[in-house]
Length: 510
Image: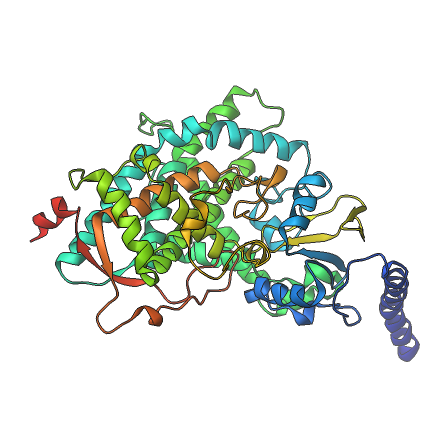
């Protein structure tokens, strides 16, 4: 009796798989002539074995060199396309924006976003539209971003003080560490109304690093559901649950503080205050739940902290490797300040076209999110003459697009002047430069990100002369990147600072 039972059990497990493979093969053969070109895959896993999630954007660029600017991948049971040119990006993100405005349901993203209760990862629906409306009108509006200028200015001043103290003691400044601390402090004060320092701050940064790593981790269950047990035995599920619990406690502690009737009221609303006020007004088309609030806070913490810090570090990396650009940048900001201002403010930076060109060139060459957040088609459509089925994953390789030699002259060169007499911007209308995305899913936090980038970078260059530590030359500074959805510099950027227009601080330290 045991053998027949085992035989039936084996057949019951393998027959559905064989049928699945049969129909999948027939469907693939039927549609192969209509699909974009792409590499051949293996049964069940498709092209998954050919991809390494840690350097995915580089691998996809290599494949685009072979198969063209639009190519097809079979990722387990999920079809996918990869876009690597501005022309096709425009077709996807503008001409067919509504078709490709959906998001795939991926395990880590859904778990960490409270089942899509945020602004980045939900499917395209009425709830997402209302959440986006809240973010655009109440969190990232010009008026709201301007209201936080005093926070940004205070924290930048603290950063200048820290650097000046290190300069006075001939201590090398770890800009990678400093910028991560600065970005997270600014965002925490804006979002939570508080900062994390000392041991608490170190643990906070460790949590952010693990959070970001898991968002970029490939879970087998997303592509081959019946093999999802692999994620459990590799420990990925346990890691995901652990970081979710830790981050959820952080959000909940902040929410509890704001709900405390004895909490001391501040003159300025933080983002949690804003969201609670909207919730109490009950004027929204959706019920704004605590999960929505946590999801929005998650977006601000992860997206704003990581990308801003990474962009500043890459900008300083490019500047130290290009003395000509550094000198021109210094002349612009110092001529305006005249050495009389302690700190440049957000009104001052509007007078610096070269600063803006440096930021554009940094975002072009060192795109902090090289692959835009994946989209998914919600129905069949045609792109560049090819059939794209519904439920197809869409990867837009911003890194490849922004280094495309067909559009950019000398694309590997850091040359901000290319933007001085150009109308190209990163507002989502020029598909050759899309660090914040485009279309309905463009990043709503763009105004807040730019405000921080301009203020921080202008004051770093205004206040100090920067040099490589003794014994190093610019060729020693590499461009290697850490794996993750945000491309941080692998080797921390450590530079020596010399006070120039920060003498108001440095003299106190002598």
